[in-house]
Length: 318
Image (cartoon, rainbow, N blue to C red; front, side, top):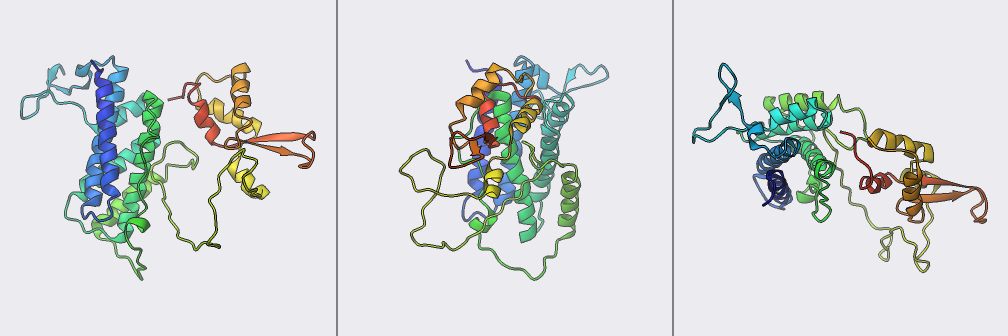
């Protein structure tokens, strides 16, 4: 028999996948409302799975109590025990340092979006793009939390929201006039965003999704990926491009690991993991003082993706 937390995790995943599938449909008039409802449901189930996991799968730990002594269980209209909702759980888990503060703010925005979008508010194109920034962050955060809490990899799913510029024709507007409700909603989100100061954070309040279509410079253009295949065509990257692809020097990698993991040490384990990925160009770039001489002095630079590999070997900080 599955643990209750495992069952809720699976239901949360199903709800989020459904939210993404609906949002990404090319012609769906109720896109925003349906996504918001399902995404909020997915996050509430995920938070309940986390809460139960931390409370030995005791279902009563989710019950809402009331009365003078606080011992009476509040009931629904059907007579069932009422359980705590998303906002309560998000606030409590944030207080316990089990939930990143950016996630709590994003969920506050997502909940407000759910509550607002189901009303009869007209949604301008600018408002729809603002909504997508909230939704993209909610999906990104969900992916990260599922892995951090349950080591649940969601790589088999296309876990992203298709950019609005792709799912609908982009139109140039001379002026965009927001309805009063949209203005208040936008200010609410802007206030939450102002507290999100780290662009490299694993969790975000909003995420800007940009899609651009450009004309190919050649009809024979080929796709490029990093490979060790000696027969593959050579592609030269500038120093600026390489530093953007591999931004972490050794000291910066160590600093990131200390900030990211509770059990990290600069020891043989760390050096062994780093050495094992040294030959993989996806994660490590070796820069020689004299590129023509492989025996000259060298320096290693690492990609941010190296940290994702380390996640399987160290315990993430709450």
